[in-house]
Amino acid sequence: MDQTIQISNVNKKYGNKEILKNISFEAKKGRVTAFLGPNGAGKSTTLRILLGLDSADSGTALIDGKKYSKWHEPLTKIGASFDGVGSPNDRTVYQHLKIISVSNGIPKKRIAEVMEITGITHKASATVGSLSLGEGQRLGIAAALIGDPQFLIFDEPTVGLDPNERVRIREYIHAM
Image 1 (cartoon, one colour):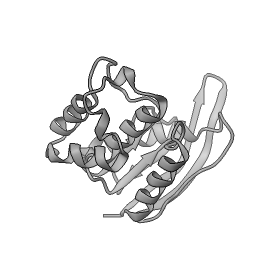
Image 2 (cartoon, one colour; image 1 turned 90 degrees about the vertical axis):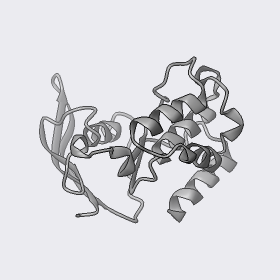
Image 3 (cartoon, helix red, strand yellow; image 1 turned 120 degrees about the vertical axis):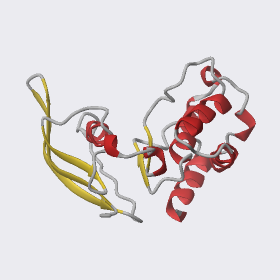
Image 4 (cartoon, helix red, strand yellow; image 1 turned 180 degrees about the horizontal axis):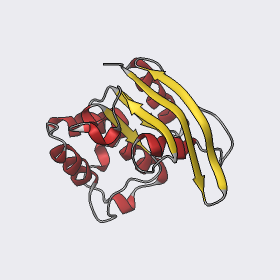
């Protein structure tokens, strides 16, 4: 396996607006890779293309040499968190994580582990709709971690977190 994320010559337009032009980079396993830029620069679009949530007009986006859609049980390889939890508001935190774990063949014991890691254990029976911005962000991170993935893809993971939680999440990521 390549043990890398490779974005090669990715281009994307929405209508006449060029969002991405010949974007290329490589992110290697065991390293934190980040891209910076102003709002609207195409950072989220690049990640969405990598995860198959959007398509490139040209170029490739591969994880260990394969498109995301080609991975069997991808959450055990790649964990991702974007803004929003992606769950109905009346579902509980525990139910949300259980659906993700069961649908990906991940042992249920991992639910408690990721809730502990992200500091949301006390919210297990709370509905997703009742969570604060920071709690929702931590749930998204828990969902990304549930498969104990080799790669983590985060889009602004510390937005909405208080300073202590930002430090905690950064320390966890660096310790991986």
